[in-house]
Length: 328
Image (tube, rainbow, N blue to C red; front, side, top):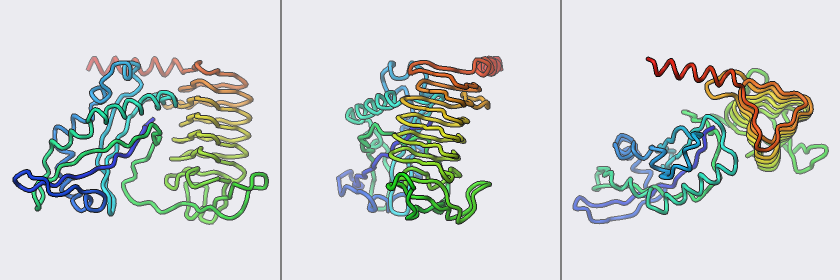
């Protein structure tokens, strides 16, 4: 799982004697993006800002070993420049763990973490520019945001065709070919808002399927049959949800096959094992509220909140790989 937030940037322009001249925001700051992108990411102080343990500065937040890496990047658009902060974990964080991480992030910004970038002088024609990262003030991370390196055209539109049972939902239509099976002009399933289906990647909601409320289908995930994603559920990676399944609550599903009448709910996490290739396959009338990781096969089973089913074979394989790497 990759959890991402975007940080507003402000610039403080000084003359060559160090006297303040102007504070820059938005497009005024973006006018200096070439100088910022050339200087800021290469400075050792900027590299240090990506030390996850230093950022959290409290062992109770990272001793569980879930978060393995932190990335801080400067991103730019046509008339904007902003910071991007991401936390990468092998096993997905529950919504409660995400909120705890977000609260700690807010605390670090209040302690002045974003001001450290001012120590990096950026020479510009007008003098010296210094950058400060502002607190995004959010514990609502974006999950698994793809790093697209080029502009991608919108892949679908929301038509006026209403769902036969839920009039708030509208049918989608492909604006271009999507993956191997969806052609330009094909009608898909139903959404409540554009947030429900990522406009990039090969993800798709197929005819009969529904994604509503704050749920989201993204990357290459597929929602098929009469399946439903609702609440604040996230279906990502190369997940396939089919049959009469429901993914709801704060559930996170990535790289899994889920079919028949399965219910994935609460703070459930379903994903492949870190470094593994085997996908969870869940079918029948299974009910998942806990964690399912790796090459696990479940049919008509219950995984309650706080319980987990993990593929021990892939765990052992990971241990063998790590031992071999250490021996090298």
